Image (cartoon, rainbow, N blue to C red; front, side, top):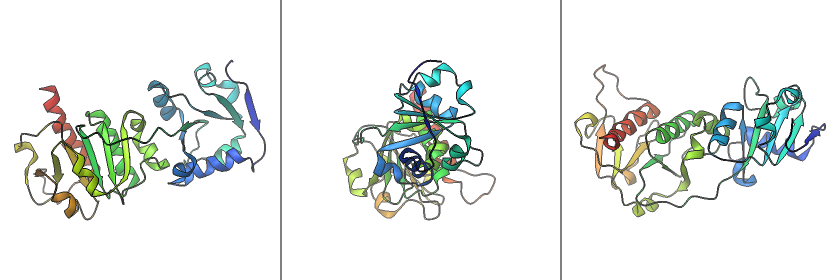
Amino acid sequence: MSGAPPVFVTSRDNALLKDLRKLSQDSTAYRKQGRIWLEGDHLCRAALARGVKPAIAVFSESFWPLTPAEWTQCAIKNIVISDLFFADISGLESPARMGFVLDMPAPAVLAPGAASVILDRVQDAGNVGSILRSAAAFGFGQVIALKGSAALWSPKVLRAGMGAHLSLSLIEGVEPDALDDLKVPIIVTSSHQGSFLHQQVLPMPCAWAMGHEGQGVGQSLMSRSSLQVRIDQPGGEESLNVAAAAAICLYASSLRLAA
């Protein structure tokens, strides 16, 4: 086993452990610390696959002797903590055995011509993470979260995003006026107005606006839209979950890229 020699942390009051508890359990701690916590091998592998070098790799004491070289050699610093400490900092029902601390990427600058997703006060972390996955999958590299949306780098959104964060340009805390800089048409979704999605010739690139789970897209965004669409639901349901709607809309746009 090679790489940075391990540092064994034996005190619950260790400053790093305190920081990790906050990063894993506080939705906005990343803004103060300038770091994020990825727990579990799936998220950590996603980071390595995108060329991200962790600042710190953290391992449970029982896992450390079994740790593959790819984990021990990738970080600037290796930390080993007891299984009990790992469970204490974990935000998961079944704690993982390892995780990475990453430095936050530099703040993204809005790219006027980029294919984008706009989140208008989407508040459920699972929905936001799922939308980020769809954005990455279907070629929408920029996500713009208006004020009132869930914190994009929060632990729950990171877990739901399953690594998508690391291939996207993420801009959060945006006022609607900032959208005036976009040079691509804004398309808004609605459950009750606009033309059916499958009947539209969709512009690409564009910016899809996904609205609040209960209230939908706000008026300030509606007034900036070039197109309003709804998704035909022959089964008779009143509306779709916002993450499901986003996946359908972004996929429909991606077909233009493949044509």
